[in-house]
Length: 198
Image 1: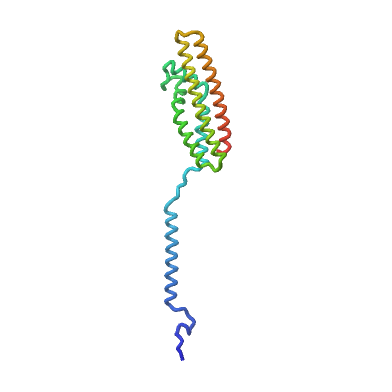
Image 2 (image 1 turned 45 degrees about the vertical axis):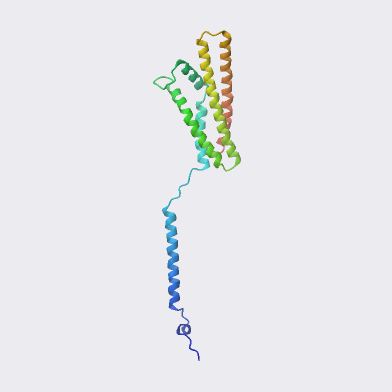
């Protein structure tokens, strides 16, 4: 007769199998603990969302809309003619400071709005961002043209020019003023549209 191994006869699991299973369980626990500590040890820093870009771009663009007014353009033209454009302790200091901030604010607004356009969740949001940048730049161009026309009028008025030249300079001022109003109206509409996604 064939002898039955002792562990089979008793119905118990061989001891070496218990050791192998135990080691396997210990290794699995060690792997899970190591992975968990790596995930918790390195924080994931999320970048700005498209909403963040929209808010920042809107805030700077709104500041620009308020700043780029007829009054600022006329001040700039007069200040250039009077050679008082530098910031100093005068009543026009706030306008001078506002004028000096225009370029930086435009750069910041455009950067945020371009980032919004790139990260926008849909085509409408991207179009709103692009339109805001376009109308913002058009308003700045119109503001510069209005300031230049004021400077030109003051220069013509101060020189010994003919009445026709003075009338032409005045007509240029009127046209540039009208263009600035139209540009600001388009910019205001673009900002209103942009505000729906901020």
